[in-house]
Picture 1: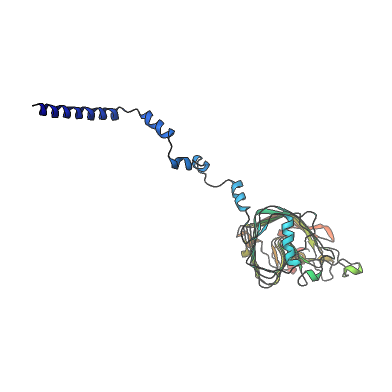
Picture 2: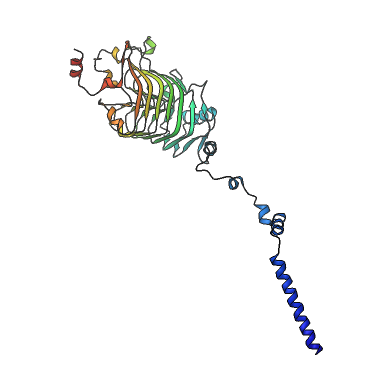
Length: 370
């Protein structure tokens, strides 16, 4: 009997303890559990704090400052340009040392100010498949003065060009690069801010590139005497991007030429002064713009000048080896122009606009003049 009573008491005690445990679980204070978790973080929580990106709402795109900062980082294997001194030093490896570059990127990681320097054009014969990545930066105050410093022994061929690069003989690409405040004075040269001449079946690509605030002075006085005899030889094939094309072709995407003046004998244009190949057409331009540019020509001083010449030697976008009216063709691919004026050097009052040079024959011109 005593043994049975003991078993019954033990069973009752166990059931009482079980009921107490259930009651504690059901009546537990939630705040007590939360406080315990925050007061005693796990090892993983202490070693991996919440980052700023995690706490801030995600944006659709990075801020402009962040994007530019990322673009301004040096690239391993590239030629990284952060100052005028960097640019000049690299140019001298070509001009002085004759070093050649193949499939290399010239990477600009800052704006470059060339004020105080007389830029000597780079010989493109040493550049093959080179990309100039501007990363949205600007080369400011490029000045090229036609002096005895620019002699054929440090240039490539004659005729040679004046510009950031004198002659392009192999494929080149320019991206996201602007020239601002450019002054070039040249005689017997082909002038383009980016490239003076193109030879050698080169393919040139310009994407999101711009030329602003420029003066391209082609020595307008014309009297058939050389400089040593006191004459003033002239330059011709002058343009905002490329002076002359004698082999190869090119394309322009989202590029502009704005706020400037250029002068020369003939073959003046916003983008390409003269194309001898027939490869440059309106199809080579997409969303490109020429605005507020004056082009002063002096071909009117030549004995062979005739009244219809101006329309054959000045143009908004480019001059071809055979003159054609191409204004309408450019409209079809999103290109525009405004504020373009062509000026006769011998008669400053003779100012023409692009609409004066629509497609018409010389006989029609004479008839229109009465």
